[in-house]
Image (tube, rainbow, N blue to C red):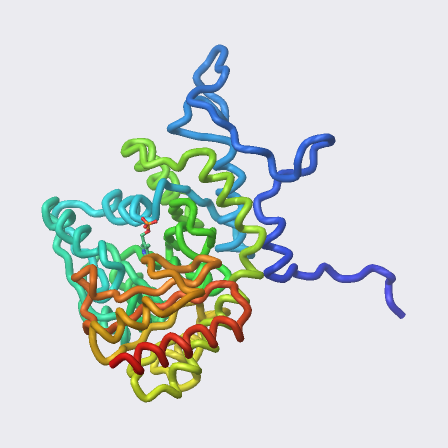
Length: 383
Ligand SMILES: *Cc1c(COP(=O)(O)O)cnc(C)c1O
């Protein structure tokens, strides 16, 4: 006999993405309220209330912050704080918590602006230690540290570390742990469930996916830690505009569709590259033979849209990029239109001259793979 009442069912990623952060329905109002453009709000009497001044709070941020907290932490209450960019969010974690004499552990192969953050931390009297992402090498330099910054998968090398293991060791030494979740997005990996204190990300990349805005966020479960990050945002004023926040929220509705198509496209491109004699060092965490695959499969739910590989030299890489028709030669990643670039043009990353970072978009898989194959053929024919 059944009771006639179905048990509650946890919603899937697509359902969560389309509904994330929506307010309760209000008759004759849109399901996602439009952006609120306001520097200040009517504020009679006491200076209290949810909305006072536009650097402190904004209803458009509130909806987006609820959405991000739901996506990063579906099973436990969490708070999100949105920022003007990923770097603003990263700085909020590192600079709001580090004190003179503290030791901070960073990866030595992460996002290309981290060395500049390192300089800033050092200028404030903070000891900065670095170690590679691969092999959980940051474990070896954790003793006595107060903050651990993890970037997995790392950008652009696509190494993966064990978040659970590093977080446990960091907590044993009293450190707070943050994971850069930019590449994975919350549908690819949920750092808070793996033991991190903070999930921090650039929303500029795959999260919003259209290459038309910059955004960052910090999500954590501890309200006191969240309050500290919020206070930092107020002090530095690194706030997103309401239009960006609204566009970002609108874009979240398609996150599952984009993440699924883009990770499938990345895997197809990576597999096609494996068959090419002129291509070496193909990396993508979804490739079964990739050195990062086993750990990625243990903690990720989607492997992301980025593929990296080497062409024989700079000229070969430039011919390949110029021959692509469906793939724009541009930096950044995670957009619905595929992009690729020769990463060495920026300096800084430890990569060879022919190293390509490729970001798979939402094109039809066969079209994208064919475009890559044809561009590789043309680049080799001209050699
Ligand atoms: C782009 C990026 C950032 C910085 O984000 P912005 O929005 O450009 O400030 C940080 N971490 C990673 C891994 C990134 O790819």
